[in-house]
Amino acid sequence: MKDDLTSSVTIFVTTAVCVVALIQRKQRRTQNSYHTQHPSNGSSLSQPWLSKQDVLQLRTKHFLKSVSVSYANTGGLMILKGNGSRLYDERGTSYLDTRNNVCHVGHCNPRVVDAVSRQLAELNTNTRYLHPTVIRLAQRLADKCPDPLQVVVFVNSGSEANDLALRLARAYTKSKNTIVVEGAYHGHTLAVLEVSPYKYQHSKEFDLQLQEEETTKGPVTTPGPHIWQVPCPDMYRQRHNTGKEYANHVQDGCDYFQRKGESTGAIIMEGGMSVGGVILPSDDFVRDSVTAVRNHGGVYIADEVQTGFGRLGSSFWAFQHGNHGIVPDIVTVGKPFGNGMSLGAVVTTPEIAKAFDSMGVEYFNTFGGNPVAAAAGMAMFDVLEDEKLQEHALQIGGYLKKRFWEIQTERLHQDLIGDIRGSGLFLGIDIVESSTLRTPAAAKTSFICSRLKQQYNILTSIDGLYDNVLVIKPPMVFSKEDADFFVESFSKVALELEELGATVETMEWTPT
Ligand SMILES: Cc1ncc(COP(=O)(O)O)c(C=O)c1O
Ligand SMILES: *[C@@H]1O[C@H](CO)[C@@H](O)[C@H](O)[C@H]1NC(C)=O
Ligand SMILES: *[C@@H]1O[C@H](CO)[C@@H](O)[C@H](O)[C@H]1NC(C)=O
Image (cartoon, rainbow, N blue to C red; front, side, top):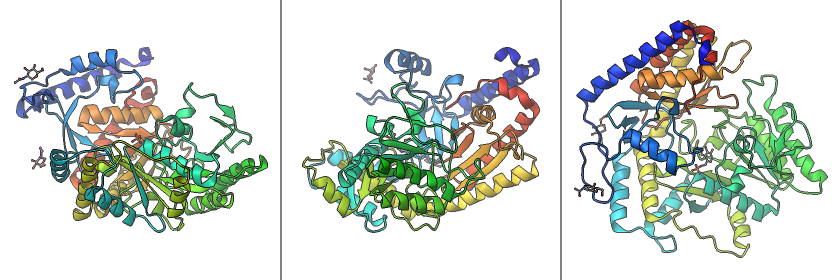
């Protein structure tokens, strides 16, 4: 493939790499290096106690290859320090982080660090003891959910939350029939992989079966007769479909289960499809889909693992976005909850909780909601509220969207930026070959992502069914200056792309 590159591109790329190296060398001279310490004695070393090369090499022996490294094509990044919306590598080089939706109120937020450190110095145990912080956190989370969602179960991760959500749904509905949305990811346990098309469609681990009824997108396979997959309600690319038409696919699923004499157990979906490519479903889609599922005995599980805690700015939860007025039966949270500490939760109704309690076994989760994780959750809530970060996300997100539309029209990036969508600090830039045809441009998206990192030290991510959506989901403290720098840098990369033209198609740029 590389043979196809013109020599001018090669020179250009080489020059760019050299420029980056020069800049980095200068930064190395002017900034202090960050040190990591050997964990057992805490001594401060003048160099990281393992070099990046050593780390990379040891990984090849001790890690699975399928545990991937971001920007592997350029040697990966060794990140040793974080602060707000910034990350620093072993040389002290600073990167703008537009992709980390875990350190919600900022990397190493001092209030979170303080709360966690103090709690860790006082007590950390398993979760069978009474503890004021833990129950207060449950109360605080429940207070953020509309009635009748008030029963909280703490877990360690988004996967655990969704796994438990499926168990709760099955206990309540006595059915494991589940409707899932194309492109969705809900986690890495065996049970949640079965409801994650993003994984099962690409993994040889599953013995996929043809779904009985074709969707408008053609034949579909799922991990079994209990899983029904519907198309992602992407109104941009499938522009002839309405929300109601998409919801018909959910109705098809319910009908399919009914023909077999079975009810529907659940629909699991995000209030804003994240891995699916930042898609906020229409009110009609949510209303009609959930109504169909409920009419067939099922429940609505809302996965808020990426989108929760004010990220959309417009509402605290993505399931509240829009005017459909639908309240889920089960809500799952993870990533941002502990601001980097392992903390997740499931919130459900007393009725569903009762059904689960009647199953006859204890629910025990050694680490789920331990006092240290709970202290992190409390501090995250405090900062979110005191610094009004939901309002901030709405404001900065609105500003980012406005600026992207400006460069789309003024700087003639029409045939590169197809769509700018999302809300708050949950935004997607749909990169296309042509605005009229809306053809996804995966290679260009990958190029942009690589270039933003190499040239401007900006870390971004790519999602979407066609790997062509540049996703913006930074820590919520992302500033107006961060936004300006990002848009300006994007625009410069877009100009580079224009100069390179079609050659980009032949390049292999594969950051993750
Ligand atoms: C929407 C969504 N749900 C669930 C998960 C799984 O969360 P975890 O990685 O914490 O298990 C993820 C992780 O990327 C996610 O994006
Ligand atoms: C800390 O531990 C590391 C690894 O065992 C060792 O190489 C280093 O010398 C120790 N430093 C001090 C100050 O003890
Ligand atoms: C983080 O950055 C702020 C200013 O940008 C600075 O005041 C603060 O000391 C930094 N914190 C750490 C832990 O480096």
